[in-house]
Amino acid sequence: MTRFTLQSAAGTYSWTIRNFLKQAKQLKHLTLIPPNQALSLVHLTDPHLFGDPARALRGVPTLPALRGVLAAAREHIAAADAVLATGDLVQDDPGGYAHFRTEFAALGRPVLCVPGNHDIVPAMRMQLSAPPFQLGGTWDAGAWRVILLDSSVPGETSGRFDPASLAWLEQALVHAGARHVLVCLHHHPVPMRSRWLDTVGLTNSGEFLALLQRFPAVRAVLFGHVHQDFDREVDGLRLIATPSTCSQFKPGSDEFATDDTPPAWRRLTLHADGRLESVLHWLEGWRP
Image 1 (tube, rainbow, N blue to C red):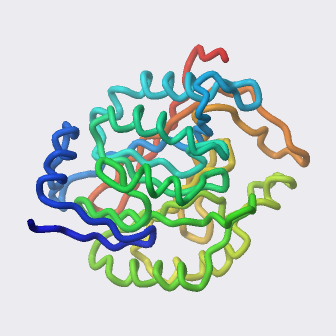
Image 2: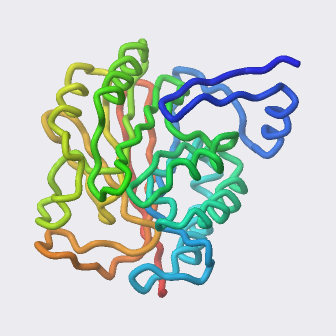
């Protein structure tokens, strides 16, 4: 039986035609996107799920909060070409991946994932290694390449890219061809002007950003981890973070503090000419 193999930064995956078609039947939207057509993405991040569906993080039940976001974003997701999930899918609890799989597989869209510091990467690989999920690697659609990076370091809250990861990223950029590039990771690669939060970002961000600056095709960097809205241009590169689908951090705080803003999601439109439009949505009326 013919078997197809995909190699990515997260590992090597293979499927038979029969298994791929079985998985594909779960997708309502499986099309090739012409290079002159805009790409629509929905960004969801930091759901911090537990195996226990009733458990809360900082007073917010994480699974009900995620379900509220998915329900409110239903029309946006239905119109999207893919969903991006940038880490901390669980809160140090591998049992949470079953809930993530159930909720996101039902969306009928490719789900592009990267790990965060609270994820358990071996368990993540086991749970999210087949369609509609993709863990790490590259995803090419239309005029764009989306690069999915693992910035997590086992046992650490901060993140870092080792030399092998940076070398892989460089090759992914070299081979992007004429495509525009969106780079996705969990940890923030720029200061958030929050003393405590900036001690747990990407520790070799200068090396990372210097590499990206060598490739004009890189249009934006998308990340999670910071549990707050961020959308700025730094040295000609756009950097975007989306608030969590559960609780948020207070922006600009010296010490750890939570904010009372609700869960959120972001819509991204990636145009064929390299422009990127972003709209942030808050879950209105949310009460934990």
